[in-house]
Image (cartoon, rainbow, N blue to C red; front, top):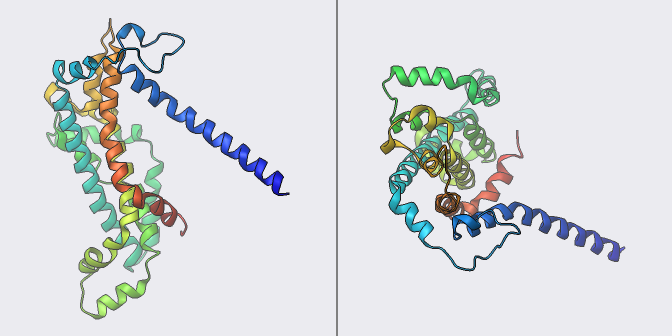
Length: 275
């Protein structure tokens, strides 16, 4: 019985390792290609370790293109959207989970149902609103459309309902206002949910291509995802420099994950158990 169980575990480990290698292989190929000459990027069989590391690909990315400007624009938008979502989603979730009022749950599930609406459906109404507000070709348009998210409200609400109501009731008896209870008692306990939302929101905003493509026209306002299109033209593409730019582009997302991973798994586990 013990021998059979060990074989099962061995097979599971083999499958997990194979799946992990499959998922990480494109990342390794991107990293390898970023150090190669253009003529060797698609050479077959793949030479994973270049004979000569071509650091000039990274130099060209930062000197021949306004890459730093793209980088700053993306960081500004991603940080603003993430911060606003943490505030708006946590406040809405506090209302849906800790305050009693008529038809609260029906309103919440009605709001939650908007998660099923594809972005393509609301894309044109959003565009018309932003155009009427005079926010075309501005970062504010991207920040406003990303400031609210039903998923974030759901995530925070599922975490808030796990916190005993006695904490809020004791604070009310001591004279605390609802905002004071939210800001000083409930929100500090929601670090796992906050870390989870920060990771999801930052990565989604950082990698967003469609919304900047719709709202941004000028070169100086472009985000990293739009700017990287400059590495590809109608007649030519520099894939080695594009891979170098891609390696630089994933650095902020890795940093965000490393700083928040301590609470990430706990946030996923505790936010999805109670309905």
